[in-house]
Image 1 (tube, helix red, strand yellow):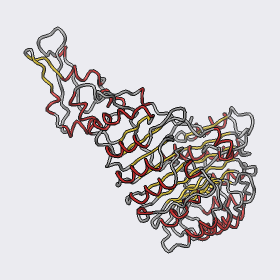
Image 2: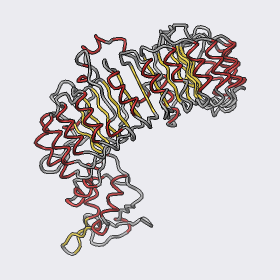
Image 3: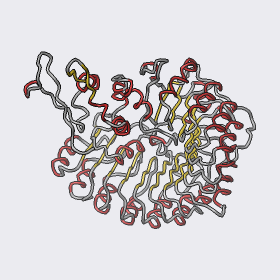
Image 4: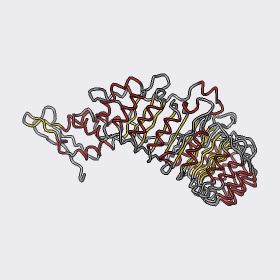
Length: 548
C-alpha cells in the first residue's frame, strides 16, 4: 500500500487543523487507536458535510487490513459503517458457531453476511440441544465451497444430515467430528461424495460405537485423496479397517485408545504394494510384536509414537529399528511394564542415525543403552526422560558429554541430583533449554548456578514437589492432532437478524466426554505432558515457567 497515509483530525473547538490539535493515524499502526474511534477520526466535517477518507480505499485493500486484525477488532470494525460491515463479512473465511438448536432461524442471516466462509466449526456443549439435520442441510446449501468442517457435540445430527453435507459440500478437504451420533451410513456418504478429502479425524463417534457389529466404512471416492486418518476412542474402530486399507496414498495414521485387535489390520496395511506411511501414532491399543513387525515394513516411516501398548516387547522395537532407517521422531511409553529395555534401545541407537527427537517414558534403561544412544544418535536435538528408576547422574553426565547437537532436554521423575545437572555447565554446547521436574535431589541453587554459568540457557526447575508422583503422561495427544481439521483462528461470533455480531451467544464450550463414557473406558484417560512441552518448544515458546 506504499507509504503510510496520515489523516489530520480537527479539534473539537478549532476551525483549522493546527499542529497542536492534530492526531496522526498511520496505516501501519493498527493499534494506535481503538477501532471504536475509527469512524470519528476518518469521517471529517468539512463545510457542513462529512467526508469519509476511507471511501477511497478499495474493498480488496480494506479486506486485507481486516484479515490482519484479531477477531474482536474485526467485530468492532464491522460496526463502523455499512460498507465496513459488508467488506468484513465477505472477507471472513473462518467461522466458529455455537451450534445450539436455537440458531436455526438465524442461519440465513449469518451466512448472508459471511458468504465466503470456507472453514467452519460447529460446536455444542453437552448441556444444550445441538443443531439437527434441517439446520445442517441449510448450512450445506449456503456453504458449498467449504474446505474444512469440524463438528463437536452435534448429537442431533444423523446420517441424513451428513448426506446433505456430502452432496452439497463436495470440495471438502478436511473433516473432523467428535461426540456426534451419526453412524457408518453418514460417514460412507461423506467418503463417497468428497473426492478431495485429505484429512479425516473421528473421535467418540457414538453412532458407530452402538451395536455389536458395525457396518464397514470404506474409502469410496476418497481412496486416492486421503492422506491422514485419526481415530480416537472408538469401540468399533475396526469398522474403519476398509477405509485404512483402501486409502492408497495414506501418509499419517493415528489410532488412539480404540478397542479391537489391530495386529492383523496393520499387517494388511503394511503388505500393500503402495505403502507411503510416514507417521504412525499408536496409543493404548490391543497390539503386539506382530503389529510392530508389520510396521517395520513401512520403509518411509519417519515418526512413530508407541504409547502404553503392554504386549509390545524388545523384539518388536528391534524390528522397527532395523528396517525403518529414516526415523526422525520416536516416542515410547512403556507404562513401567519393563517389556521394552536395553535390547530395544540399543537397536535404536545402532540403526537410527537420523533420530532428532526421542521421548522415553516409563522405561528403565541401563547405562549401557543410554551410552549407546548418546554416542550414536549424533543428530539428536530433543530428548525427554520421564519416570525412569534407573536413570541417574552417570547417565545424565554421559548425555551432557556426548550429545553435542542436543537443544532441548526434559527430565522428569528420575533419580538425578545436582551433580548430574552440573554437567550441563560444560556439556551440550547447543543446549537452549533444560527442564527438570519432580527430581527431589535437584535444588534451586544448582539451577541458579547453571543460569549464571550459561546465560543463554533457559533453566526450568520445579522444586516445590516433595514426592515423585507416578508419571502418567502420553506422547501422542500433542495439541492434537487430536482433530485433524483444527482451525488456527476461529471466530466466536454470530450475527443476529440485523447483521450485528453477538459474541456472547457464541461462546463455545467444548465440554469433554460424558461420565458414562468415562465409566465404560476409564483407562482411556490421560494427558499429554511431554508432548505439550515439545509443542511449546517447537513453536518457539521460550518461557521457563511452562508446565511439563
